[in-house]
Image (cartoon, rainbow, N blue to C red; front, top):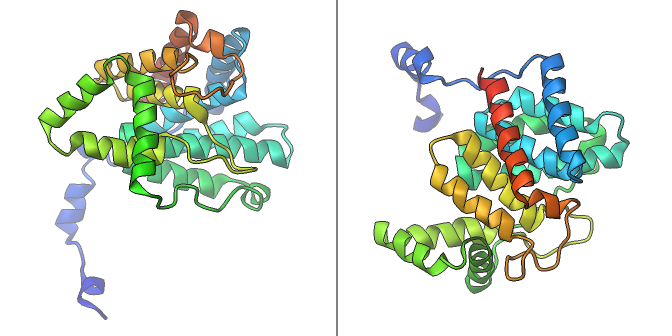
Length: 273
């Protein structure tokens, strides 16, 4: 047996790690009836504005990953896929997986790992047999990744994108380099389209950002930046490259953005109490 395999944690250390004050456990889901009422309300308000399932599902997934309730993530899959055939269930799972992956850039790797693991364990066998299993963000040339990331960055932050890069660089010389080459390039910007592979797209990526940051709390300036990013997402030069999302005109209006923010607040309150 290797030295690494022999390592043990003392009872005292285990007890310290598990202290209730550390809040080491994920949060439970609201009761089923309350959960259904919550998302019925969110969905109906959004649908009155013309948005489709993709949008409220993206919003809900990002909020639940951020407040860290894997049980509620699984409930959301059940809610969104109820009555669907296999393809519909795969579509729901694909939206949720991609949203959860992009949440890494806003609330960190551990929560995305735990919630994606829970979602995967919850998916029916028919979904697991039909959902894509090939990685799409494979190593690519550094210049191409940087170009992709910078394009998304400019689409969100213009006319302040260069000034913001300079500010980040002043804080730490590698901060902008890391953000662009580890997040905006390979993760937040979508890879080249592939037949049958789901991508969130530019507009919903901004929805992920707003939902995760709002649910996180304490980062109001970043929420404001990504509200501007959402509003610019359908404009020329906003990074959308002609893609069209159902209800995008309403979603990017003040009423639509208010719906996103208020819905996230409702989700966070329902889970956190």
